[in-house]
Length: 211
Figure (cartoon, rainbow, N blue to C red):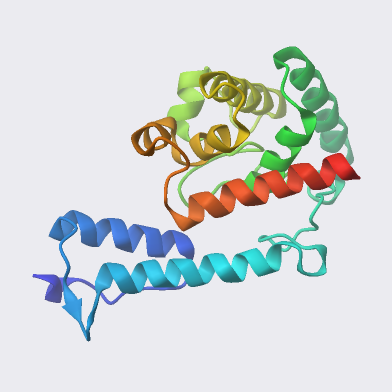
């Protein structure tokens, strides 16, 4: 019975997603009415509201979701020596794997804001926010090492771009939510948070290319 569940917490999109997953796991995606709306409907509406607000914030005053400038200045988030190393490694790895710098920089900005020590609530680590399982798959032993993290993240992006025949939207969707979901839906998964991620990264990439 859902009476034993704690009340929904709308204090962040990750919590909303976790709540949706929890309820779906317990009730098997069945509708459970509460005041004319299901729990899932309420939570998904909150997620849509978050996405709309987030989209407004992306270019408001030149700031992104994290409050950082639209085109991140890595020197703001790393020591000068780290900033120089990030620039050097990023440029070299993009040449090595044949991935556009503008795309990698946009992904890195969206994922970590250029902070090599960043850790998400879900456990993603470093500049390219590699999950432990992904890091292991890529042979990244230390996700907080700038060179290892960028090498793994860029190499993974390269693999996804090849898998989806250069389609950046699909590659980004797979980077964010996993290729299994992209394959399942035959395109960008119909989740607001995934679609927002793809749109935002592409917008940041295009902004870089125009500047």
